[in-house]
Image (tube, rainbow, N blue to C red; front, top):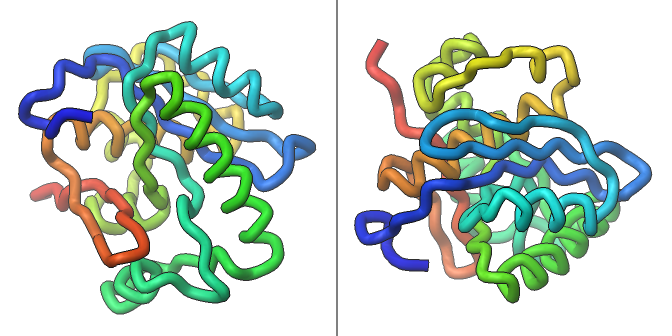
Length: 189
């Protein structure tokens, strides 16, 4: 992916990935700064089909994109900044992480750039705890019915806000040798 300054990416996605296809995964699409899709899916092929049918060029995924026995160095850096993340080495998290890594590999082979985010940390980094106000600050929403679809979909929309902010060069990046996590910038109230 080109640097955010050079990028002409206008369609991004957010994915709140579940560890198992038996549980719902939230997915959201933003085109030109406007939310155009937000719903639940279950299977990897559904995620891939939605992202490719909308021609997304970048997604922010709420899942670790690298493994460790316990906490990664990037997770420790997040914790030092007050963000509450779980280690990808824990049994339930390992299943999620392996699914995310596999999905990232497939998406990147299709030309879709994938970045890692953590929606609850992105909310905290923004300083806006009213979810509707936060989302409205970063993207335009014409249909708020997604709010009744549950936390998975709301977190996917927040991840899409991170992706859109990334394209606009306005994210906060927490980086260590074993990963990068992108968050929303602090908003002056």
